[in-house]
Length: 215
Image (tube, rainbow, N blue to C red; front, side, top):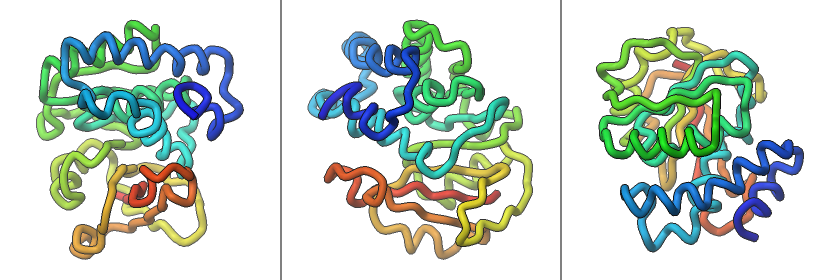
């Protein structure tokens, strides 16, 4: 499966508007990728699996309530922020990155889709002062370094994440791959890890994870 069929397979309840938005992403990213290197050329044929569906892995562990404000830190090409904004049209997503040309492309994708619940800004997380309910990101750096640079963006709740799947009130949802034990060991936060191989059957997801951190 490729394209919208792949997304619809895992998210069968998409509205016609959501299907149209996800379908449009292929051409929009092809257009902007010619101008700015958002996705590597050899990886572009896997856009829907390795970038869009991967971003939506967060939605398989947390459903953002209407009115929730989310910041996508180090958004790069708009992942995971733009796919999540399509899936959660009643939540607000702000995509930030320190590289201006990438933010210009992300803004172009947002405008091309006509998304009303997504914005983009060139700013480093350390210099950003607004508060959000959640931080989302995709493997920008090691977790300890990332948390140090971003924890000021959410209110401190020290939420305990038990074995039950109760929704987080605020915190970090981080897409990561590989072995995480060394990264997680020094952290003094409540953490829950979901293996995406238990959610998506494609080989790409064998080592991919969503890390929830109650900041």
